[in-house]
Length: 184
Figure (cartoon, rainbow, N blue to C red):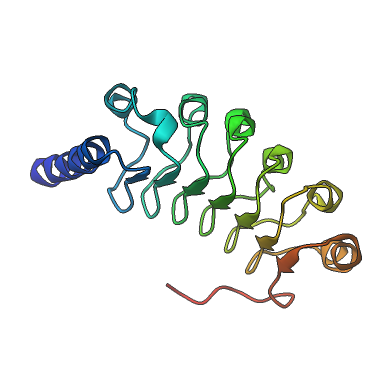
């Protein structure tokens, strides 16, 4: 077990060093078995955080993200968090004023993360395969850049299904009522 943990830590360190050394705008920590965002990464990346526009933390075991994560990487354009155990976002997600796309699919959201409705550049929201019942349709309709919201395989209430279509100017993907996601 310690050997596997050591390998996971080494993999994260290698990926972070690649980002710093190459001057890349991408930090890819997908499938690293992370249960939280490693605090030491903030120090390693302190001189390049403004250059990072895409972070992938997909398919880890994250239960939460901290406010420090959101305020440190405030220049993000895309955030990929699919396949974790997230059920909420910190209020500081509102500092991501340049964010264009966020993938929160296959997490554990029961409530729509309404902080996303305050992001002026946000074009795509993916919340597929969560447990969301209600959606702030009016707030979403007021988002200036929103093109697509994916809510497939969520137990959306009938009111959202009826009210949303005439109010929105973007694509809202929904599964038929009662549809369940296919097994992994």
